[in-house]
Amino acid sequence: MIIAVVPETSGNRSAAADMPAASGRPVLVYDGDCGFCGYWARYWQKLTGDRIDYRPYQEVAARYPAISQAEFQRAVQFIAPDGQRASAAEASFLTLSHARGKGFWLALYRNLPGFAPVSEAAYAVIAAHRPAFFRISLALWGRDHEPPRYDLVAFLFLRLFGLIYLSAFCSFAVQALGLVGSHGILPLAEMVDTVAGRLGPERFFVAPMVFWLSDSDLAIKAVCWVGAGLSLLLTLNLLPRLSLFLLYALYLSLFYAGQVFMSFQWDTFLLETGFIALLLSIAAKPGTWLLRWLLFRFMFMSGVVKLLSGDPNWRNLSALSYHFLTQPLPTPLAWYAARLPPGLLRGATGSMFVVELALPFLIFCPRRLRFVAGFGILLLQSCILLTGNYNWFNLQTMLLCLPLFDDAALRKLVPGRWLGLLVSRRGARAPARAVTIFVTAVALLMVFCSLVEMDERFGGNPPAPAQAVDAFIEPLHLISAYGLFAVMTTSRREIIIQGSDDGVAWRDYEFRYKPGDVMRRPLWNIPHQPRLDWQMWFAALEDPQRLPWFWHFLERLLQNDPTVTALLEKNPFADKPPAYVRAEFYDYTYADSAEKAQGQWWDRRLLGLYFPAARLNNE
Image 1 (cartoon, one colour):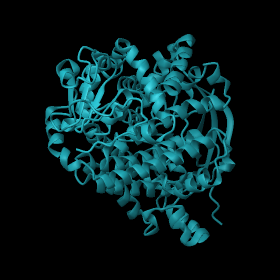
Image 2 (cartoon, one colour):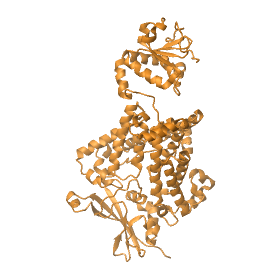
Image 3 (cartoon, helix red, strand yellow):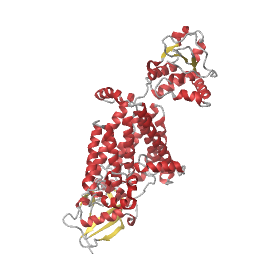
Image 4 (cartoon, one colour):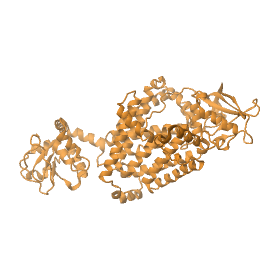
């Protein structure tokens, strides 16, 4: 084996040892009485395999009389087959250069000005405090530290992510025709005609979707249910890469077809995760790092936007005193959470900021610190999931914590049968070097564009070329800007839609999940995403004159269209259409303990009309 020689000016390289390596392999000689040295020598041996011979100096010192005992005790010694040797940081980097993907350290040492002296100085500090750094190593990596593998992590992530995709496709499938079908609130065919007339051929790049081929109701249903079928194939590990590519393409199509009903962050979150999952299925290591970067951005920006918004309720830690009441679709447990002591809620708000602003930085730290980040994020997401209905959003975020772990951490939790299946396929799944380089290049492009969007979110003005690159890939939604609940709503306003035959007696339409009847208990709908119910929550924060979809919705109610009324829990005009519809505006609060004991969950107070009485113009 040929070992490249560092120029003679290096202070740690001697001309030659008295005796070359007897095995014909490089030898790394370390202090066998030093726990720190033995710990990292065992780790490096797992990295390099049999390409390097590892020996404590207590066994082989006699073979190298030119090296004093003091030198052996001071630093590790790397001895090449030709007798050339190096020590300390240089020896460490020469050793790592024999491990796949670690040669860049030696390149930096040789070529980056200043890197070598800084490395040697750092090595000297560590060598002078080996017992302390040994304890730190045990704390950060564990006693049996081994090179991280992510085959099992990737295998489990992709199987479980198939279930996330399944939830998303099935959820939209049961609502699609009422939302964007030919008789829906915002017919897809009308959108297709409008965009095609305005953009011409450019539409294929601005809004890439399969519905340019057909915008029929059959096509909408086919995309939804084919997506559900592909999700099952992914979960069962059948044609995973093809399934992931098609799932991304189909959900991107639904994203554009859904219009305002697909305008939520979890839709772009799913698209970005779906594309990274495709990369993960090709090359595990860059895919794993990209998933970690996505989780970091999502969590960190969720905390940052709360502070940047200037909302005093976040800064004085009072936000959770309102959140459990005012969130879009609370669960039954939200009533109890809203009654927790104010001091406890302020403490919980502060803890949330720790999880969102501090713990994400541990994602890029040694493994046990990553575990701390993972468990902290899992705890926060579990609390959110218990008190609020956010479809598959929290489940997907919790799944993104899986890449914070490694195969060694998961082996105790995974059935042996899965481990056997994975081990049998490990060799076939190793990507070619060219494939890994390509995936890494795509990952770097995504990181670059995400930094551009983060800069813009912070109020920066990225260079024009950077913005142009970001704008070029933006229609694919490979990356997105995130940030949840930047401003906390402090009161709950609900829109109650009513119909009437004569304009005097009015009857309420009841939605499936959003509050309406004060006696109705909040429902669980995870992982379903009732998109009309969610839009009604946002509509309560807006002027109805600025919401064309709301007018179309009322028009469909006046027509008593069954595809739209099927989105509701109760249609009081099942037999014939109403002559009039209107929308009243109410302020909702939770019922007190005495009222709840009688089966009442809400109190409400009429604020006035949200939308005046309207009827169809039959002229």
